[in-house]
Image 1 (cartoon, rainbow, N blue to C red):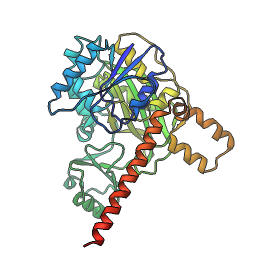
Image 2 (image 1 turned 180 degrees about the horizontal axis):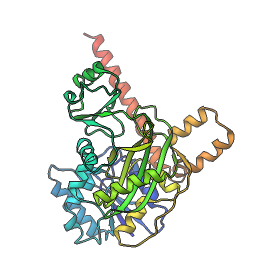
Image 3 (image 1 turned 90 degrees about the vertical axis):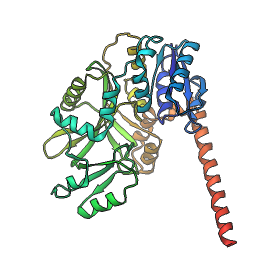
Length: 376
């Protein structure tokens, strides 16, 4: 099976590659349009990496991708990021002339769920549980409901989110906003829980649920460790969402358990692959491979997943530093990227090299600035 990833600079490309590598009869081709975030090209599982010099015209890129599909006899195209999903959904008809199938939903639905405010309106209209959301400061400045969350409309990974405790915080967030468009959302007291899904025409083909057990040092960012579990009440919410959207493709849903009423509230939807995709694979659900099977119209049973924990390298470091029990420390490498990095070390080595190089460049810039200032 020949697979093409058209957006190889996506942050979680390496995780997807390593999921696909668990199936032996695969050749992975990757297209890059940037010289940054390219450590995945050094993976031993990449058959060929291809650079495209990005232009202003998206049609040029689509033509390039189509040519690579035909040249390399590609069986499956796997977009990773939202922008790639939207682009290839837009050109789905012409791509399916040379591919068997492209399991992605319509551009309209992709844009709907990716826009935080439009999503909140849709959820309310469909009677799906979600926190109260406001588009303008004036819509909520008389609201007695605090705390609130001030969120960039196009933010990802929790970046730019601010906690609003009172009217002054709200005014400060608005006047100091550098992220452009935003929403203001009711804060739900409880805990975060996520659901990852692959579906076809509103029917769930595979899913996992995960709850953080090691938080990131960055507020509102994805956790450094997740615990997989199954909550039937949450699944009912997700199933209704997928059916209502008649969704085809992958999706990662951020939810929050509401302590006040015992319900799960939909907070955000990412219509793309996600950072913890490798963690899902480790517990039994290989979403990238299942995406390939769906692309080839190969049927499969809904896979079960194990209720285990997974920690990334930051999470593993925190566990060791916190001096947990030796037994837990020994178990953790089974549920972390350590084996992946030992088996496929070049991406990590390149990442370390880049960090050192960037620090040296930053230090040189600072030294030059100090010298220039001293000469004034």
